[in-house]
Length: 117
Image 1 (spheres, rainbow, N blue to C red):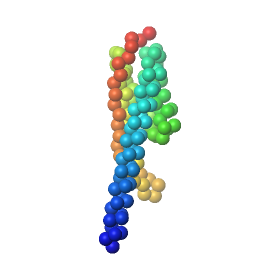
Image 2: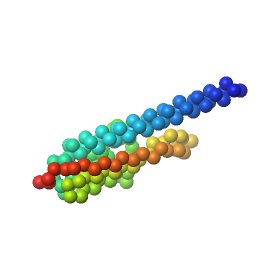
Image 3: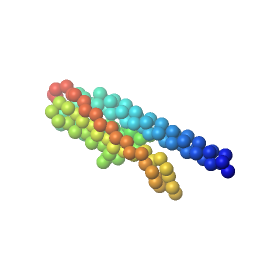
Image 4: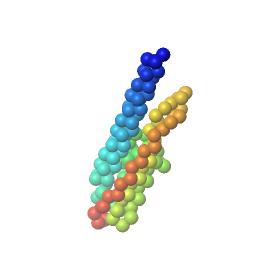
């Protein structure tokens, strides 16, 4: 009985480590996607820059295994500063196909942009 209990405890720790590692991996994926999108679109005209960056992020995220929706991503441009805010969750525990427990993740970064055209 003790062996079974400790086996379940060990499996729980391994699963918790796995979920944490995948959550951290998805965070770094989002970080790379944002950096790449801002770098590619920094020279775009100011009137459409924020929207194009947001669309790039929404397009590239599922390709990297991070499901983001329209409401998860906000891109705001004020003066020469571009602010990117992303909030999403990584499902950790499933029951009958539904996520019972999810790990909330967020990314927020401000970028200084060159003068607009």
